[in-house]
Length: 217
Ligand code: ITT
Image 1 (cartoon, rainbow, N blue to C red):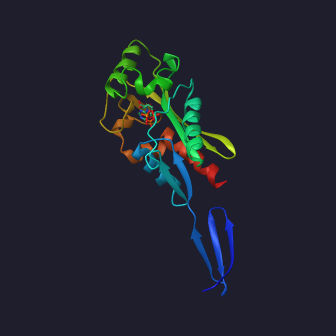
Image 2 (image 1 turned 60 degrees about the horizontal axis):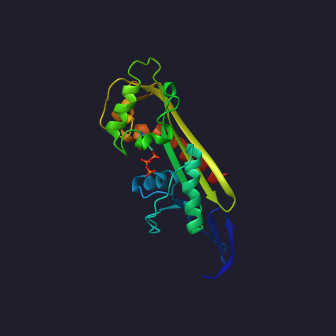
Image 3 (image 1 turned 45 degrees about the vertical axis):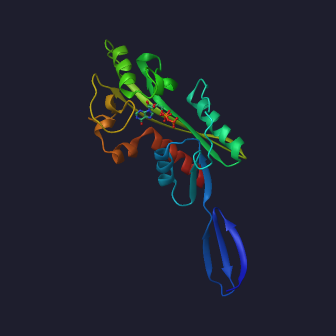
């Protein structure tokens, strides 16, 4: 078979053959995620689908510690994405997430992972519950900010899920502050929901969908 024309539309390469058959050669666009977390990489790959090839720092054998010393979720997401873009030249996505509690002036916020102990979920939840012990206002939200850095600059995508913090731990699924967070219009905590149910409404899912919309627009 001889080719007569090759042209591009979006991420798809069309090859017109002499006999006027068209074949669609897939050219997946690479997105580097600033993480070593395989679960995060796979979750993003699943949502973005086959038009994109999601890679991680592990794939590039980059093990330097990226110092997240920003003062906001946006700054931290940018720090991670920029570092990866500068190292590899690939479109890079950084993200930062956390729990924001209204009556604690936004704490634990960007310090969510290490509020009482580094990634010690039990200690972190205990500290929040202790600080809220006499508080009636239990309103809180989870937020994810994603930042894409590519040749064209910086682009941000944010997702939030609002809810209330209960007085004790309920449920074993999920991670982080899931056992004390009941999303609005629900009766159970994130830790009592199936992963698929949480992922339908989560802050992370909302941010990734905005990112996907941007990539496809
Ligand atoms: P990497 O930066 O290594 O990817 P991390 O644990 O710091 O991992 P995040 O920035 O996504 O990940 O989240 C920071 C903390 O915020 C996380 O350790 C949890 O305590 C809390 N958190 C974020 N998303 C959460 C969720 O969906 N459910 C419960 N807690 C969450």
